[in-house]
Length: 325
Ligand code: F6P
Image (cartoon, rainbow, N blue to C red; front, side, top):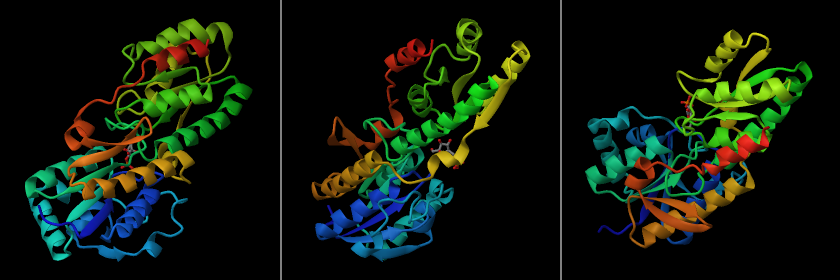
């Protein structure tokens, strides 16, 4: 196996609060252990286009507290093609980069896995996504901050919901996973969370309308996990038609969920897995995602991280059901 002297680092996919803390951790821990670190801008696109700069410890000063990513990010179409990946490999050779650390979500780590296998190239992944949908780690970088952001937004929406006695459908991100919706509903005291993992599906709405709202409450908050077909608008339209006596509003939180100062928990997670990435390379690991389970660093093979379903604690559904009576 080729000796690793220089490590490239990039962020890819949707930005997530805490990515900068991870960039800082990889850079500082890498330099501390004798590696040269190169920052690659704009995700895999920047790799293909050779947008690369050597990082010193000063390049990552004063960023632990900032949202977004100083490396910028992209969802690269070019890297999904064999020609794009060949070009990426040529750039890595030209830049004398011997290993990569990729910070991103499911799509980004899938790209990393394909490339690592195609070119027998060492890559370590860090779980960077607000969705928390990567298997093998208790949380992902950005998830805790986003959960707190949603909770604060819903606290505000509740003022209007209560004052006007309205039903609010609040749509939150999560792609195909309901972690943000379920846990923000519990944290904000919402009445219902409509999430893909709940086998009751859209019947939840009927159950809820019949059970709760008519009897005990004049206003309520329903958190809906984003979905192309059954998002917040879909449910609001149904209530408008089926229960016209209610005053209904929709609030789609959108990208404000991804911005802002990372929480302490996200900064700590990012620092821990960033350090873990360098340790993994020193130990000769490759093609694994660094996660944290029960407070301990774990190395999860890419194939598991991206293709196994992360289990949701289904008891949380009962918790919400019981507490929202
Ligand atoms: O994966 C993170 C995420 O924010 C998802 O929750 C959401 O579906 C998607 O990215 C939005 O992507 P974009 O920023 O490209 O609109």
